[in-house]
Image (tube, rainbow, N blue to C red; front, side, top):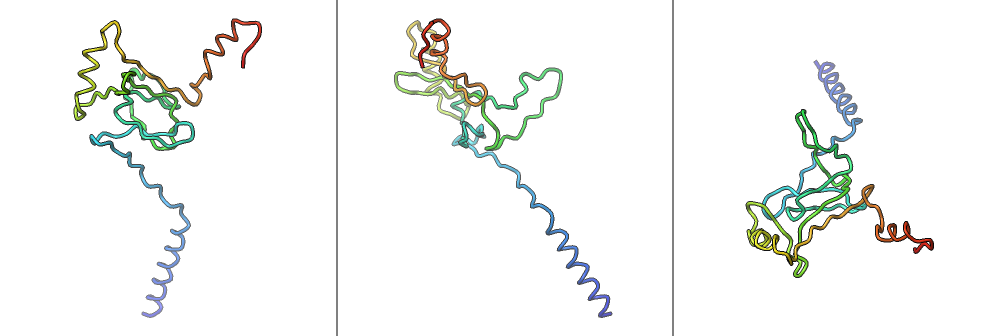
Length: 153
């Protein structure tokens, strides 16, 4: 009887030791949420982890495949290791008001945007931010250098 108990105890100890050699399981990444309860678009922007809220309605990642047609699209889980290539937002440049279109957000910026956007002298601009492989450097210098004999730096 003592041999059986000793054998079972030794077996449990060996199985536990074998199990400890496994790599620890990665915890599933839980995307943080903004003040409205919506998930942030998270990722790596130029080596810095960022949370982009509803103020940035479009975010493009390095591994985006473009438009998916004829297939069922499965959204990828994004983490702070996901490389962000670009994002954009609309802003009124006179006071820095950013357009937020979300059903739980205040309708203030959306109402102003809809009221002013079609005016000939509206103050709304669409801002696009490019990083990583999409960033083309200083485009104005490249354009000038392509037309001049003496290059500027």
